Length: 356
Image 1: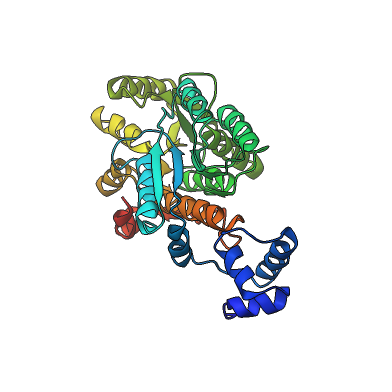
Image 2 (image 1 turned 30 degrees about the vertical axis):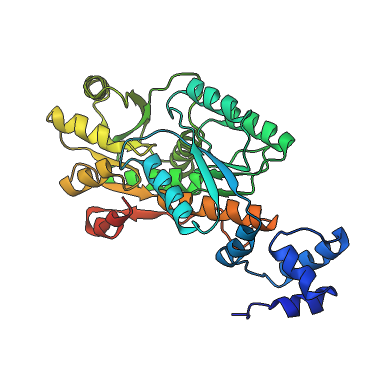
């Protein structure tokens, strides 16, 4: 592994003084554009790794602070977006030696109108940077255009949106997730049976960004494989368990050939609980993420598998990437956009429980 460059070495390679390099590394200004460009070229060529904690000491001397706005869906404890929130808060705590004032603006992930209202309020806020959950494409793109006009940097968690310019994105590859979901359900269900995909009912016309990508990849898998299994789609309410039970029971009665059920969001446990409450057995069910409810159903044997996207890690990295940009004015190119995914069964569930 190459050794980290010293300030003196950077100065020699870029043809400027050590003091100039120090001012650039700690974002203290008072340097010419030519000198800054020369140093940036050296740093990029040698993959220089900035140190956020070291820079925080220099930053504190300026008595400045960052105002960070975070807008993600609201969530119950132990749910997917709560795990992202926990990751963000862990990042803020980890870099507590940097003066940061954070403000959360939550919205309903099943209501595009709620997202629009939240994002419209953010567009007028005075802040240094923004972390955004990209649940709804149109609302996210509209806000990002306004942030670009104001020169406010932003980072995405759980998605990316074409036509925007985030400092960084952190997410799982949703096409891969959709294909994995299809492959696993296909392997668990008998030949000639049907597979159901359950989608959450939403307010507004938009399906969430990730759900749409996963669903398309899920369908494409069966088309590409030439499978004889029929795909059928059903809906359930995340806010009304009784209605969910009635809807799912009615759906399965109308589609007696279904043996596999896939949830394209992280509330697969709601489907498992609805079937258990109705005394219905004999289905293979798969979904996303090691949340409290999903972990319980995996342990009980009513949910077969989960595709885990490490939401806490996404939240932590979002804070780290944004602070790097605010301190140094450049993205951290060492950070990877796509996060690894894991397939979780009852046998290996214990290794992920500490992330809840």
